[in-house]
Length: 583
Image 1 (tube, one colour):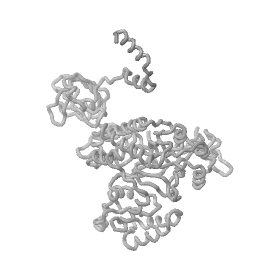
Image 2: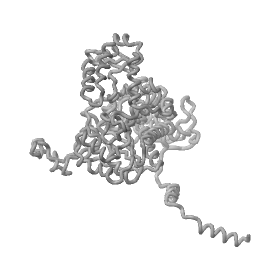
Image 3: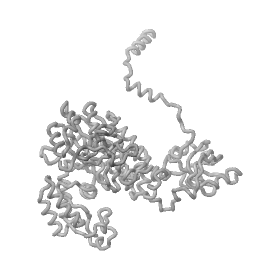
């Protein structure tokens, strides 16, 4: 072949080459675009990741003074949980006096040379040449007192200063993990072809049918008195005269709305704030929290379980690779000594899949074998028996079982429930009870029977002593689950699942959705909802219904699992809970 023939051949190949796809062009554009923004200063995190690359370089560091002792300034900038040592020549006529005047909390800009540190516990330090005070801080009025060694500030104290608590390592670390969790969530679903859908925060639908929603209204504007509210003939508030012409609420879940896009686009997810007007003061409840809710089309029950397991493992793996220092620090701070190992075990485990029926049977077996002792007040015990009698889905033979347990000493009734305190299934504080139940493997405060909504202690015990692994509990009683969950052929249970992990309990709840119109209408009526109110939702079953399902995960509960932080109020920047809505 001649040179001209070769050139003609190459030109022909070039002209006949396929056009790059839209995705390929977009990816190329992403790679090429760099933009203008860049930090003018160096962060502590970037230096600690590769200190050798900074040795001998003139750099600028900005942050807050964590402490100042003689010639040493300990600087923190929020980029990681570590501080950075900066060294000043006190003989310098300008730097010496200025250094001594720096108080904790003062914001500064430090210029100098990064050098190899001669001290232990650090690879690099900054030899300071110039100090610029950006913001002074009066140490006498600073609301965050200096921590004593081994005695960190309590989380309860920090909650009094929510606007300042981001200055502490524990909140900084928690926010870093939260940020990684959000990025991991979007990466996980987008990489698998899911569409991100923004569902409404204001809605006329109550997803759970529990009536625990915040009402959104303009009827009380302009100083209107409660007595001046417009009323209907039967004395109720007339929401027909409200902004939306009907009663509207803050959403408790985006699931029902995201289903509309699932049944038109396929796999979707929503991720945003949700609200519950639940008057609960436990360490696991907030009035405002963030939910991740994917929905998959043309899917079966196994698909829902597989997706939930994969998502949880993906997020935990991302924490281990992207913020291991924060994970380790928080674990140690909150009593989980090997938090890295704990999360690795979950990621590397093949989750056990167990039906609710079998799980409850195993819990009952533990009580029958006297491995578990139940201690509760007479009031709580009688309340459980009343629940059995009133629940149509529970066999009344349970009453005989509970009474037998009491007669056989497997249930111990106490007068004062406040005198009982349990930690990790053991009695603490009460010396008499502590001695009496010393040899018992575990103590419960709540009875167990088929049909009961399992408590956190039941879930924790199951994963710690029965399955000894993360567990997906499936096929719950229909009566204790939401109306939209698909019933099993037996009619008593639904295709619902919860993921339980050791030490925490439930972290994810999901199900396949009822895709049969007649069955769904029947369920809607059974819980007292007017089908006309749900007509838009029922249309999804009238016109081209498909098998589908999904799950819900509270972001803050995922963070509690990952960090070991015990109170959900410390996992969100500005917690909202009963009698608390500050700032």
